[in-house]
Length: 161
Image 1: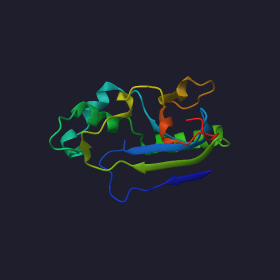
Image 2 (image 1 turned 120 degrees about the vertical axis):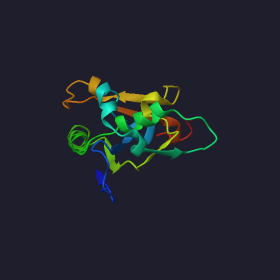
Image 3 (image 1 turned 60 degrees about the horizontal axis):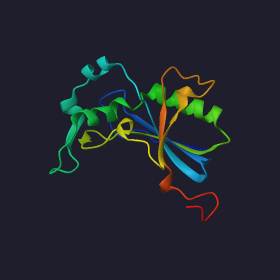
Image 4 (image 1 turned 45 degrees about the vertical axis):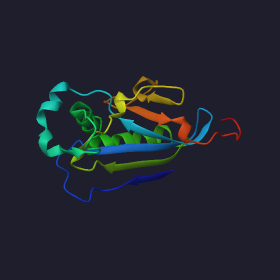
């Protein structure tokens, strides 16, 4: 399994700044499925400790309306360095034969307005969430979800699309 933790090449303005993703070798009839991991819950008081004017930037699309709440959730869904390391260790141990890659990197700051938080996406035919903390023997002290889009991945058996 390849584990790639890209160090931040700048001073992070906050501790909660890390994204983690993984690639599952075989999942729901698809191969090499990218799963973006995130925290689905946080203490609402955490929203008050950040200087959002510093952490958020210009809109992705200047002419479109933006959700400040969604942009804030992008940060609140991310992991601290300690959470990132614990999550990677957990995945490496628990899913070692099922994963081909784990990637982690820092968010880019300021976070552009107009990004959609993963927790705001809706499940559909090909889009879904893995609720890791609902799986038996989950050992991390914080909940983790994984977002995937099967339409972005080839079927294990060709011609099954």
